[in-house]
Amino acid sequence: NAGVTQTPKFQVLKTGQSMTLQCAQDMNHNSMYWYRQDPGMGLRLIYYSASEGTTDKGEVPNGYNVSRLNKREFSLRLESAAPSQTSVYFCASGGGDHTEAFFGQGTRLTVV
Amino acid sequence: RKEVEQDPGPFNVPEGATVAFNCTYSNSASQSFFWYRQDCRKEPKLLMSVYSSGNEDGRFTAQLNRASQYISLLIRDSKLSDSATYLCVVSYNTDKLIFGTGTRLQVFP
Image 1: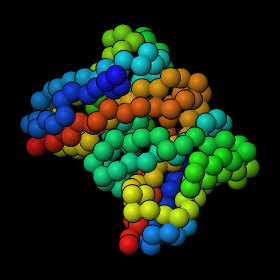
Image 2: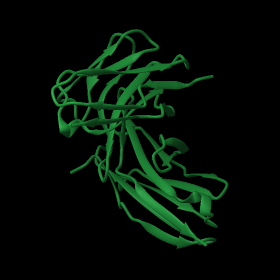
Image 3: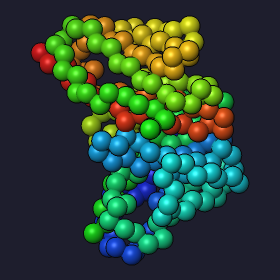
């Protein structure tokens, strides 16, 4: 049982480049999340999706777009990467009804 | 003001000590509460949910005070393996999960 799978694990981008972070879960969860984690800032919610076909902004959505392709997949896109987006990105999924969230292993992104 | 606030620590305690962390939240509509544990450079993992009546899981006890809007985590008989960052999490309405910045615990021999 893979749980939550994120790709890639590491990425270096140049300023202005675009990329998509992929996330897939095999636990049949309704809710999926994208967080970024920076030193001293904890995990900050970028976007979340309470169900297939819906997405909502979190605390720090600027510079990002998301797509809930189906129940399994929730992708995060950086259209024009900036150094301020250097961070560790975590995808998570949850069963809804305020139950436990399971996290992927994270993507370490550096924008130079 | 952040929605969920924690003392970042670090808390440095000897093995066998009892240590407590508090977390405050600002949204009175918060419905569910959790403690997560995160090891260095790893993903967060659920430690325990927090129930209104308080709950215990082995050496770990969690309490919720809705009137004062805070939750706590008590760790008894600390082990070296308890060294990690402990994240307070609250959720409300559409399963939006909000994390605190985390409290770092270092247990020394």
